[in-house]
Length: 73
Image (tube, rainbow, N blue to C red):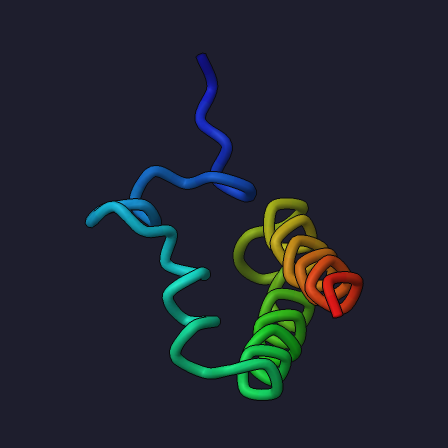
């Protein structure tokens, strides 16, 4: 089975909690949105030089997470 390094990398769940959920709990709503925007910028700005398509998929993941969280309100 192929590992999914965009949606569920194994190293993000070490310790029993998904890292992104811990970050969101610590930063709160606005801080978490800013964190996501920063990651979108990071992945979009480096995709040609580092991760290619995978970096664009990661940027989309953060955008989708922001949209998903906005729908919960």
